[in-house]
Image 1 (tube, rainbow, N blue to C red):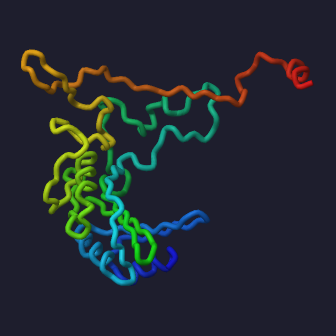
Image 2 (image 1 turned 30 degrees about the vertical axis):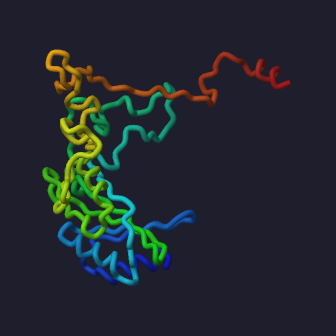
Image 3 (image 1 turned 180 degrees about the vertical axis):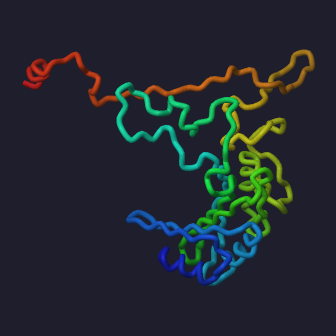
Length: 245
């Protein structure tokens, strides 16, 4: 079954439950991505696993996505720079957050957070990506798939830790990568680079304590080194010709 046939089989099987079905085909690989609503997610996932035509027995990965500022970039330039710096030094485009800035996740035309699942059919040797958008940006919630694929346990905990996505029905949803005293979710686009708190060992209390972060906020702009000779103005054409000779 190729990706076109897989996409058609998914459309036939789930009909109106699919929000969209996207097929990417090129010489190297083919991909199929479907989108479903949280209320339909568990029934879709169960059929994806058990249907003989589909048979996605294995959950490869679950990850979170923050779509705020999606599709906007200060680093993509349309022309070369004569100074060695790109538009990343310009804050006017609003694509790169600076300290204290607020984000606007309402202009992207989609919910801010999504949980993305990568499935593998060992039986039929095909793969599938499923995207489930969280309906509430302030409290992102999707159902846990741990009852269908137990391997989702740590994956969902990671997405909760890094993005703050709540997996309803997870039996032990707690942080897995950050410290227990960590504040916030570090993969969110509005999370400051310096964080919110820092920890140190207090000699008087004889224990580790938390305090507001003391790092001075700053924005770093990388320097671009160009090796194409555009700034080599010292050598004349005669000198270059004599060198070539």
